[in-house]
Amino acid sequence: AQSVTQPDIHITVSEGASLELRCNYSYGATPYLFWYVQSPGQGLQLLLKYFSGDTLVQGIKGFEAEFKRSQSSFNLRKPSVHWSDAAEYFCAVGAGGFQKLVFGTGTRLLVSP
Amino acid sequence: NAGVTQTPKFQVLKTGQSMTLQCAQDMNHNSMYWYRQDPGMGLRLIYYSASEGTTDKGEVPNGYNVSRLNKREFSLRLESAAPSQTSVYFCASSVKKVVRGSRVTNEKLFFGSGTQLSVL
Image (cartoon, rainbow over all chains, first blue to last red; front, top):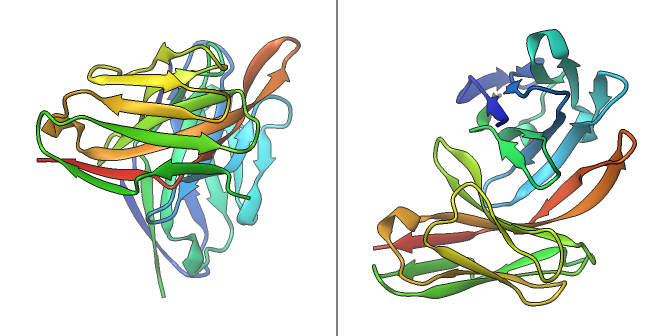
């Protein structure tokens, strides 16, 4: 069965600084990979996804992620963080049929002035 | 654009009480899902419905039942609530995408805003 690990529970970044959120997955074949963002009191919103092809994917709100098969990783990056990016971020992996989307435990991003 | 609508937004139950969480989507999606979100555990799939008339168990189905009433609506029922079911519940629907020849995956999940349920 597939699984996702997000090793950082909380991350604090200064506004304007760069950001990298880590995600490692476990799955025997090439997975489908996603990043979702959750603002307080809201449901999750898709930031970006990887299915195949170019391993660097661009998403909404200036986010990007890179699929590295050799490291089983799909880290999320943003070059300059804005205060509005403060939220919880979830990495997810889909495999074995589209219903089986497994989420990580999330990383809460705090943005300091 | 309503998207995915969940009701109620908040609910407090006593142990043993029953209730139904309602979910409706207006995007003509075939697939719908119920997740629960607990601190430090991310989102876990309770039940899903790949299409109208079908339902299947997810990762944590015990203590829950579901009904896919029609293409728009997917309800989650707690027959006898327990404190362990205190959680935030999310309904979602999805668009399918065919990739890599014939494999099908979710292109995107659309989430409702959640129901905060407390069982005392």
